[in-house]
Amino acid sequence: MRDAKGHVFSDLTVVGFAWAIVGPLTLKLFADYGARVIRVESQARPCVTRTSSPYKDGRPGLNRSGYFNFYNANMRSLSLNMSHPKARGIALRLVEKADIV
Image (cartoon, rainbow, N blue to C red; front, side, top):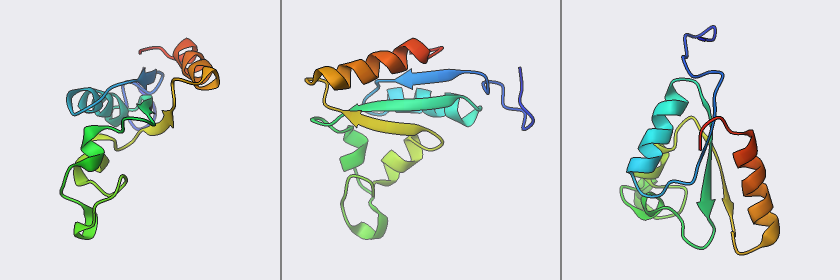
């Protein structure tokens, strides 16, 4: 069903454990069409798009990459250290509440 803005996925929750470009691009499409998208990243291994130029003002940084900001627009994200039981528990709870993983 569409929401008031015409978003076809407004009733979906998507949790993504994607890395690099193809996964985030897929998540972005869901987000752009209204889905609630939560992207889970590894604290130990940030997405390669975070360390790819171009950077805002030419200064590198994990939140400054143009690629990362483009491919991750319209979604929420968090990073977890999956070697810790509490982090795995958080990930499992997100998966349980998701319509799509």
